[in-house]
Image (cartoon, rainbow, N blue to C red; front, side, top):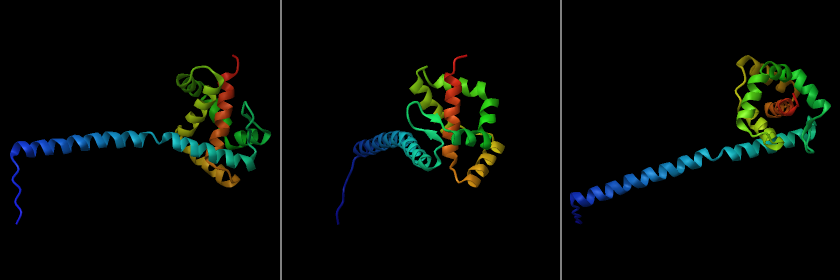
Amino acid sequence: MLTINITWEYFLGIFGTLIALAYYANGRLTRIETNFDWLADTVRDLSVRVENISAKAFDINSPISLTSTGEQLLRDSGLKSYIDRHKDDLTAQLRARAPFDLYTVQESAFRLFDRMALDKAFARNLNKFAYRNGASTDLLRRVGAIYLRDIAVAPN
């Protein structure tokens, strides 16, 4: 039989250390969880670029611009009229996110459209359009983001 005698001071020291380690580890894991947004953005960007190879919705040369196919997707999906209706709010959100240099505005427009919650009815119609046309909503959102970027950087 093995008996271990631990005084209460020693026990409180061990217990306090375990609590401190758990608190520290929790903080570290929380930071790791929240820092995976960059990975999701990178994967989304890659999948949109791959899909665009066959869809040819936008030209990837700098500056990225919509092709005639992209403009048709923009109109037919309803994104153009949606963006035009919400233009003031969307451009205000975009300007709040980015200083006015063209590259940052473009990246901010992409992120805004990637994360933006669309009206439920419009989102449902966009999903139906994407399904009928064999396109992803990510590609359609990118097309909308390019259109929004063009609006935001256009001279008044």
